[in-house]
View (cartoon, rainbow, N blue to C red):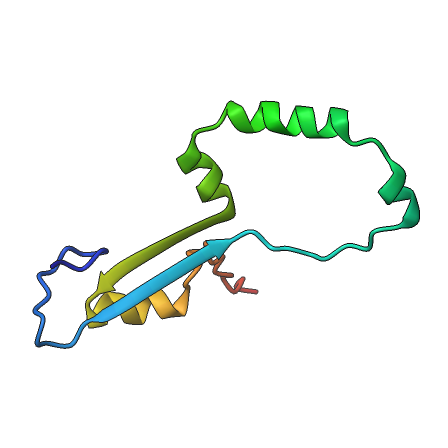
Length: 97
């Protein structure tokens, strides 16, 4: 097994780190009104089914849930936890007066 970042060989009995990332669709509950119960949703459902048929099963699943698992060496883990989202950090330079 190798570090996912630097490709350093990792040994099973030695120190290594596992990074697990789970992404899933957020679900916000909504309130159903009396009007909602009496609406005709046939057209809406037909459009939804048509759009779903155009996508593969895997693509649909990944829109709802996707997980990742990576092994890291200590050095790469220490760098990873400093910036887990990989955002570019703008470093401000002090202007000399």
